[in-house]
Image (cartoon, rainbow, N blue to C red; front, side, top):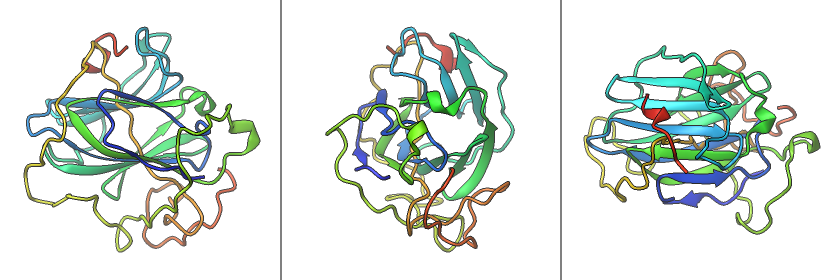
Length: 248
């Protein structure tokens, strides 16, 4: 199931995920951090509320001030232990494409076609309903791609909000990868399309990505990540911003 991309959302943003989270869903986010960016965050959240904040199944906090990307979860307004392994994969002030793939036991995350991390589920992925994004970032598009969710994963549909399905493009960590629009490796600077606004005390950032769908993406290899050598997946079978919490 693929829906029409969301273009140029106002940041901070809260976007419902059509069909909710299910194995095989991939969220594609294309954006650019500000030239003087310190932090921004992408969250897969269990509801739309941000003050008080609903639980977060996956929190991706891009921290240029510490040159790391923190992974964590939030339950009953309490953060879990942080995962901070890995180098900073995206440059300050440049365009990027982030992908989040939902699998039965974990989320997989890639930046600009390269697998970055795997985050084991700490909360049931079936509870995820919204994507939130906040911080020093502008977002050009958010896409939700993947096979139609099995009935047991599908929450009530939101009729008429997203347009007709679209065919996702090819993706992989090599020959099949095409950089996001305006992404020029080694060239600093991106026009800022919008100013940071609505920064409350807890900026949540949601990472958008495309998903495994018919004739589309190259497979996200089991135990690895994106691979340009995998065959295309024809069908996926399983598969308030309040509080300065994200600034902590």
